[in-house]
Structure formats: C-alpha cells, structure tokens
Length: 327
Ligand SMILES: [Zn+2]
Image (cartoon, rainbow, N blue to C red):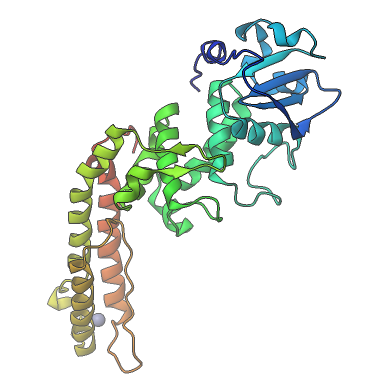
C-alpha cells in the first residue's frame, strides 16, 4: 500500500487556533479521550492507543506538528489534519463505534455502505497507513469493480447495491484508483463514466457540499473512448442474432424468431445506446403465439454472445486507452 507523506499534509493543516470557532463532534468526543483531532472546524476526542493500533502514522506522532499554542490549555495532545471532518467522522466512527471490528463492511448495520464511507476509508486509510481500514474498503470496491467477467455478471448491476452508491460515484471510484494506484478498478469504473452524458463534468457532491469531479485528463479519456465503446456495442447488437449456419437448425419457427430478434435489436442499436460492449440480450420474444428459438439455437446464440462478451471484456482497457496489468 502506498502512503503519502502525512507530515506534509499536516503541516499545511496547522491552522492557527484563532482562525475559526471550533465545535466538538456530537458523537466522537469522549471526555476521557487521550487525543484531539481537529479537522476543518470539528474536534474529535478519541483514544490515542486505539488509533495507534490501526494507523502506522499515528504510531509515530513526530510526523505531526509539535504542540501549538492552542494545545497549552488542552487536556490532551491536539493534532490538526487537512482532511475533511466528514471523512474523519466516517473513519473514527468505524474505529470507535464499530458493529463488527473484524469486518467493517458489509455488516448487518451497514449492509450497503455508502460511497462516502468507502471513499473516506480508502483516502484516510491510504494517507495514514490504516492498513485494515484501507484493505476492507478496497476489497469491497474490488469485488464490484472486478477483473472477472463472471463476478461482474453475478452482481447484475453497475454499482454496489444500496441507495448511497450511485452511478455518479463511479467518478469517485476512478479518482480513488488514481490516488492509490489500484488500476484494476479503472476499466469498469471508466466504462460506467462513459455511460454518463454531459453531466459527467459536474461530478457529484458529498453530504458536506464538497464537490468531486474527474480530472480533465480522465474526462478526455472518456470522450475519446466513447466512440470505440459505442462501435463495439452496436456490433454486439447487430451480430448476436445474425443468421445461424443452416446445418444447425431446420425449424421454421427458429428462422422466424431469429429474424424478429435481429430486427428488434437492430432497431435498438439505431437508437444510439449507452456504450455497453458487454451487454446481455433477452432471447424471448413477447407474445404467446410468437415463434421462439428452440433450445439448441438458444444455446448456440448464447455461446456466440458469451464469446463476444469475453472478447470485449478483455479489450476494455484498450478501448478505454488505459494500461491495466494482469487484466
Ligand atoms: Zn432452432
């Protein structure tokens, strides 16, 4: 795991005590706590020893600024950090108010963690070398933004379940991948960004009002990739229900069903679909009297679809213009 230089960040964060009035966090203030963390205008009073167990950086407090004037009348050491209070609230909440110390997420209380929580754990976990926090959050992301097509298919959705992890947050996943060097997250996360429209430049807003967007280079990358992804998607639409070799099936119903499926998918292709070169199709035509494919034809076409999906999955990094080792 990479760790950025916490000391640099905290030096920048050594804001004078008189700059802004500060408030104690409602939940994460323990009267007998042994360390006060100041993030933006919020003070968290927690237990130093417990934090040291989780964070290599907090084990060595010399990397933080030495006590400043505002520590003189403080009951315990004070550290200033440059991260948001929101991020610290999430991470300290996990450490000091856990529902399952072994497995931060998902748990019964947090079956579907929000993107905010995952993002805070990755960012602070990475910066302060909180290995277990970082690894749990990263494992959750990697399970969804997977390198395996079969795992992706099992999930059956673009983003993790839950109301607080939406398609727009894939912008944040790209940024987390860039921050941490976890490049295997990028193909799916960028593909999902490419499915967005012009609002991709607006990014998304966290609960405290902070906005996050893609960096300009990644917006450009999505712009360049979209044409290739749409071309691969249209080919998928057009080819999957193409004619079968005559020897495969002689049934008239199959011939007619294949023609109808081909017509309807071609119409959909013409409506300029969102890029999805790994799309799965429906093989059943609506209507009780409509001809349907026989089992053999269905199997043949599903196999054709699977080959195309796997080939396009493999080609995702090159279509997106990125290099992902071991993809
Ligand atoms: Zn058939």
